[in-house]
Image 1 (cartoon, helix red, strand yellow):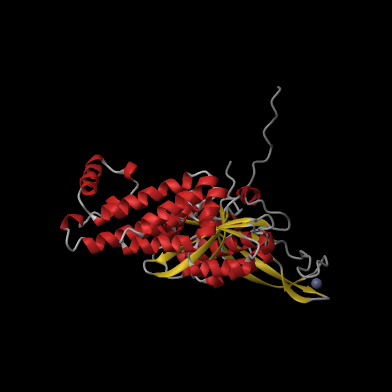
Image 2 (cartoon, rainbow, N blue to C red):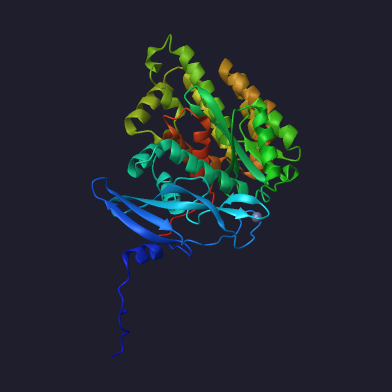
Length: 415
Ligand SMILES: [Zn+2]
């Protein structure tokens, strides 16, 4: 015989569950109750009479048990059965510290879930809305949000922001028309490192504080990419005086696009063919379907103010690809055209860009965009969908960190 013999004594069910739960002495499984009618498995964990414990406060060994409190924890399902652990949680009598509750190794203090159940819940919540996870698990979503908030907060507490030197920032609406959240992205990591309610200058102040609290240095922030919001400019100028501001190309083009749409809305009172054509003028022409492209070509050939505004906008697109030495001259020509167009919204947009000239030109020098932020934006939209139906803005922020924060969260390792 070359194969080893099977063990003489078969393993008992309680010993099997003790092993499977990874319990260490003095804890063992002492009772197993399968409640078929409830679809529940209840495991009782206990320790032998006379067991002594280390004091949870001073670590003094061999403290006697003062009393116990029976508690229950939800654990990972056992097949189709919801599994609960039940145990007498001991309180010890320490000669130095008094009566202290001993922590159990399978759960965080005060929680009704085991660590493994929490890891599984976190895994689900990264894949589906919290409400859906709560249905899968048969637990209240409020309890799952608490688990999520704890782990996201803990992971954020541990994260170092010491290497952050280039930041992209942008606001996003938490709900239609109300309540904004401003996001700060470390462009090197392509991760949201801070999210805070509001879209005013104090958001930048809170970010600078958070950065410093996580080992970062506001003076080391050399680049900030953002839109032309006066509040953001004020905040960044105050909090990051060493930073060069780049106004994001995407936001500059959006400003001019909105000017084109203002021209269109005024003009459509006299030119009904412009009704319902908003997106034709705003979309990238290369992405239009054939019939839309044909409609746009017809409108452009008609004598329309909107068509002139559109041509001015489309021409500005070429600015971003200009070599550094030609960018300024290119913009000057464009600016003369725009300001002499007799199209007031276009004139205003051109003036706004000129007023932010240094930061706009800086793009051509650094070629920085909020492209990273645009990628993150799709994750933020997913976060919004996941947090939908919850009025709490902190749920939205927690979800942003979960999906776009690149945090290191506990994983259920099934591999
Ligand atoms: Zn003690």
